[in-house]
Length: 246
Image (tube, rainbow, N blue to C red):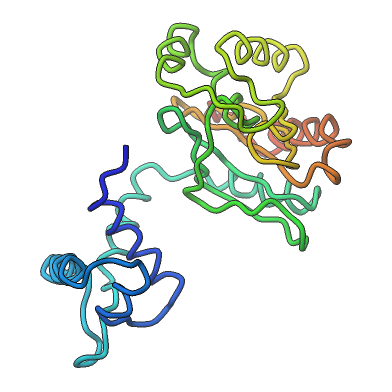
């Protein structure tokens, strides 16, 4: 369930991130198709709270640095170790595909760090991108870190939809794929959620944080190499992970 008012605030920030310039009330309302009155109330509230200001009189609104200050304060509490970003940077450079760090978010898996491929045809992923936890290699690499009881509780909340021909659409199918993943030593996906997309993922627990690392790209390019990519991920983790890291 999405709370519309909260979503509108986030959409406004994403709008400014893409526009990279001030915008008037009319421009924002027209862009989203919102009523002028509710758009004014939202912008006025953000302005009163110190999150928007008017750089020039009648020149439109723009975010204040307060957003950046809050984001920095939040990110500094539990940052990813530097070697984790180095991991996906190396994996992306060596494979030519998009490499990401993924964390659980309820029934979804969310991308918390991404290094995109430079290829014209590639997997477009951004920080904050969410995918069903059961219907992706990266998500199943997270599920492998759950106890059976935790997975059973989560399964009750999942809507098992056939996103693709190979999507596991039952608890039994997901559990079977997890067993297969343990046997082969990595999780894989061939169009399970996104059509023509393949990938390999491995669990990456750090302390008590459940994370996974995934390399994904167009199936025609990475599909035949998934076992080799998975082996590369494992070797790179072993080389970069500090010996004292949990």
